[in-house]
Every structure is written in structure tokens, then in C-alpha cells.
Image (cartoon, rainbow, N blue to C red; front, side, top):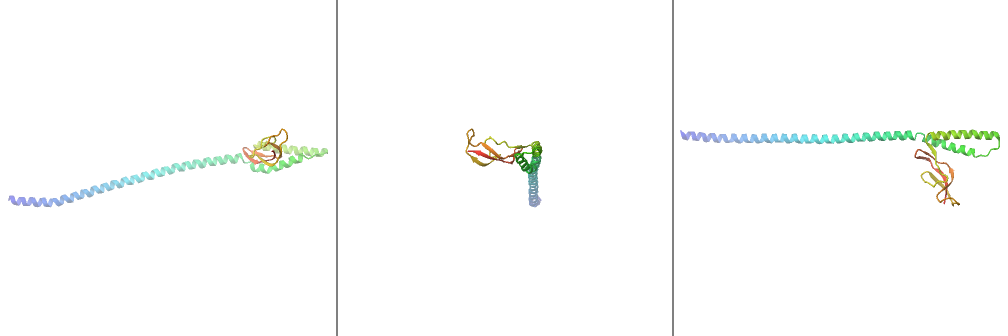
Amino acid sequence: MSEELKKEATTQDKSDEPVKAEEAEAQVNESAEEAFEESSEQSELAQLQADYEALSDRLIRTQAEMQNIQRRHQRDKEATLKFRSQALAKDIIPAIDNLERALQTEVDTTSAENFKKGVQMVLDSLQAALKQNNIEQVEALGKPFDSAVHEAVAQIPASEGQESGEVIEVLEKGYTLHDRVLRAAKVVVAE
């Protein structure tokens, strides 16, 4: 009987071995699946985190771009308001030149003198309107030549008391609106 028990025990041990191997293989497979699921979850989490960071960065850039657009729009609006009278001034300045030329004409009758006074009054009101809108005449006579606001039409030798580069005659007045030149003064400069 003891031999039979030994045979049975050996048979059971042999039959238990494949079961243990199958269980071990199942456990390994289960562990691998868990590890795969865990690494898959981690990679999915990493991907979501990268997407979040990219979207967050994009949001910050978009907000900054919107602020820049708003600032640019405000600056353009201010410039438009600041220089709104520029086109009108450019159209009126030649009329002012003509009125000034008319006033330089010599008259001998009383009616012509009265007419000249009327022209002077119109000229004064136009110049006052320009001044109210920050349109100023460029100071040129006796000043050093400045290419930003003067246009040299001619150069003549300097006389006594004049310096080289000094504006000695203004042929046409220049005008500025704030810091913008509407028309450069046409001048004669001493050599």
C-alpha cells in the first residue's frame, strides 16, 4: 500500500505541476496586462498634460495678441483724432498763401483799401482756426536750416552778419500739425 500511495502522490505531483505552471503563466499575463494598462494610463495622462500645457500656452499667447490689438487700435484711434484736421489743413493752406499774396498788392483807392482789410480779416480768421487745431507755421527766417521742416530752394553767398546754413528768405511758409510736417517751408539758405 505504501507503494500505491507513493505512485498516487507522484502522479498528483506531476498533475499539479502543469496547473502551477498555468497559474504562474496566468499571473504573469495578468501582471503584464496590469503593467500595460498602467503604462497606457500614464502615457494617456502625459499626453493630456502635454495637450493642457499646449492649450494653456496658446491661450496666453492669444490673450497677449488681443491686448496688443486693443493697444494698437487705441493708438490708431488717438492718432486719428490727433491728426483729423490734416487733410482739411492741406487744402486750406494754399488759400491762405493766396490771401497773403493778395495783401502784398499795393492799392491806391479807399475802396481797394477796405477790400484789403476784409481780406486781412478772412486771413486772420483762417489762421486762428488753424491755430485752434494745433496747426502752426514753421519758424524759418533767421533760423538754422533744418531739413525736417525746411526745403532749400536756393543757396546764395552769406552777407555780413549771416551764418552759413542760415535761412535768409522764406519763399513759401511751412506748417506742422503737432509734430507732423504738413508742408515744409521753401527757403533760401546762406552758403
